[in-house]
Image (tube, rainbow, N blue to C red; front, side):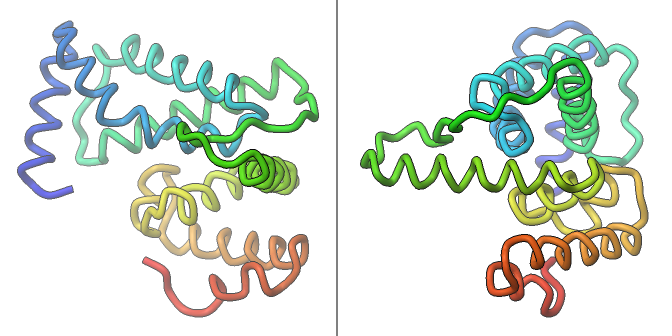
Length: 191
């Protein structure tokens, strides 16, 4: 995000903190797609992902009066809320194994939709074998395409710690999926 966008977001946040509903709507429109995508990879169904995303933004509105601009991106605060909502979801509800819905809004061919749903279901099942921290790092790095620095800010760890956890998780992922699927991530830096 460039400085102009950063200043604009800060201005919108200040307005939202004062109860400006247009500013709250602007924050929702800006961040809902990325938060939904993040949650969708962790939730057992699209419906659950939608509900959890709504909870994230409800918590955002509740927490805005106490939110402080500290130099850490606002998006990082939202990811932390999202991670907490997902963790709470699994604490209060045992996941039910079911065929996942497709995440796309367009109407793909039925066989493509089935393949996508099966791949997403497989990915969700595999991700559940990782710790919450490993899941967060893998999703933020490879689904959301965040840099190591951004992930470190979001989860409150050092860049070195993020790289270390990511490396161990990718080695485990390679064992679970077979080396060919993830070997290219193990080569070099992917900022």
